[in-house]
Length: 398
View (cartoon, rainbow, N blue to C red):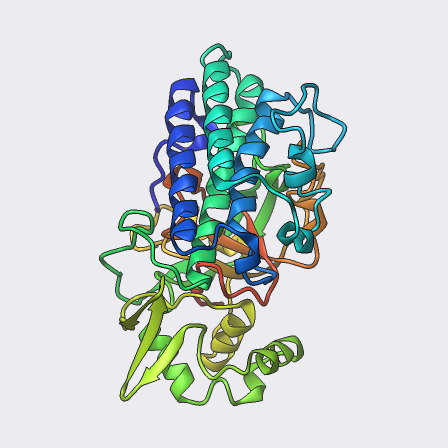
């Protein structure tokens, strides 16, 4: 994904219409995977912090687009929509501001068929309205926002299917057929203009405002840490030697009772792993995935390396170096998720601000991220213990 094509950030009405259709088809396809396994009813879904009931996710995707596009809401505040909802209890069911995570298992939601009909109606009305919209960034903002939200939600739904051990049809989870050989790149450093502003197009609130940042010279892996490299860490007792783990990481490890990454299983002399409900042999050259920040930090300490800062990662990604490969997995950085100078919350008020200081920045994209969403400026963020996401790491040194 080192070269991004047809970014949603500058998509025109025709491109947005095609992308919105594709995103909704993807959402419905993922939901049908859960439905086929009998997990369309919330009572059958485990209450994990990393999951939402698939039926709720289905309705939420359409509700979000209805809120910002059809109901012309100026923000995500519950009082800021100008038009009545298509579903009489839609706000009571799908507004994440007012429906706590744990309550989503106890909602009296419509049937799967009814919510699929709702999804189609919202999309049809959205496309009809888009066909009459202007071409300015202001007029296209709600459509781009709805698309970005559904794309991100789609990746979360795919990660949930992995967590639940469910199979997915070919094409719903694309994978990389070739992995670059491990190598290192030296970067001279210099002044990087982080963030976005003034260029036009869509910008997430946590990317505003643009500001200069000096980056000293550094060396960084050209590619992600592989399964083979990480297996050496495991074989050397990396999960048993507490000197590699911070206090927080040690506490996390004790709760997990881990001796290897999530989904790894020892089978004689080889490692095997679970991929969407299927046990397969681990490929050595493939990047190690489902790694928490704590595991990434422990590996770096063992390897006498460190994680890159997000400024270093962005500098490398924007350098145009032909050997720098990214886009296979989200990459943990050494940077806590904090606001850039001059931050102001955008219309989706709860997107960034509630997560400052408690979350860590990941950069890049994953195989499950639509290419239109990928950007060297995009700041993903999760709590340090998350390992259900499609995350890996690369290492860095001065």
